[in-house]
Length: 128
Length: 128
DNA sequence: GCGTGATTACTCGGATACAAGATGTCCGAGTTTGAGCGG
DNA sequence: CCGCTCAAACTCGGACATCTTGTATCCGAGTAATCACGC
Image 1 (tube, chains in turn red, purple, blue, yellow):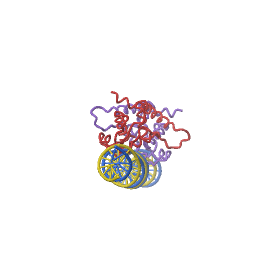
Image 2 (cartoon, chains in turn green, orange, purple, red; image 1 turned 135 degrees about the vertical axis):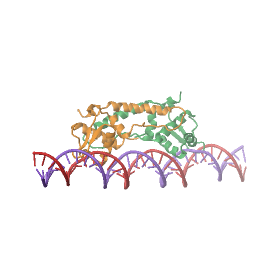
Image 3 (cartoon, each protein chain N blue to C red; image 1 turned 120 degrees about the vertical axis):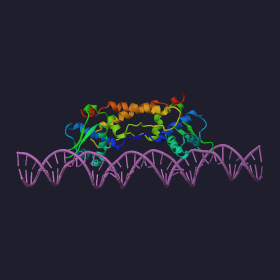
Image 4 (tube, rainbow over the protein chains, first blue to last red; image 1 turned 30 degrees about the horizontal axis):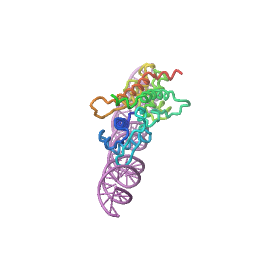
């Protein structure tokens, strides 16, 4: 029960892209170097963000990654869901006849957290 | 980023103990059987709850586990922290000069979830 | 000058390696209860 | 009836075994820009 490092990389990388030009894509190598990660690994993380529709990739020379959505339309939850998946954090797995009351409580707690992450936009961090 | 099965077992087992007599301890075997887990594995989980001060163990014949605290003083968060640990779910790990703004948001979100889990008492489930 | 091909700078995706943590199992050791047996 | 011993029913804790997941690397393939060269 911890957030993966990949999520950390994804959040920081998205922040980098937000601070950079929205037109010209940024290369993986540049972004990887500034975080001390290997470029190939970072690219693997970024393809998840591409599949989630958050960014797009431009191949070839001068290529890289670029934000796809509006700058103020990107929440923490979007990024986290893209990396960690959207499945519930807690699954009961037993077969009680009805709904599991424990699972119900856990789901509520999870939603509290998600609610905060959905409302927290990435762009809020950049305008100091 | 998922809750472990051990947490699920711990929550259900605590519920079993809450429903049972608070005086006589319940054996692991009985509780393990009702959940389809191996007794030795469940006992390993329960020792974590013992160390957290939630329950106590009685060894020997007729032994087992027993709640240590008042019935209405046991929150979900107590149990989860005992199993999953209390360390923050998100660690930035980079060395930005100051505090990481991303981590700050994540910590807030985590606290929202914890707040809900702290307020949710286990005993609320049993009195239907 | 202009098209054409080669080179270069990139990303993409799959395969693979490695490490750590979650999930279980096994077994020996200690502890309490209770039954049996002898005085 | 009392006390002792012994067996049975438990938990405890450490040592493994296994499986899944996260983390990371390597490499071949494809693609776009740029450069070079010949016409």
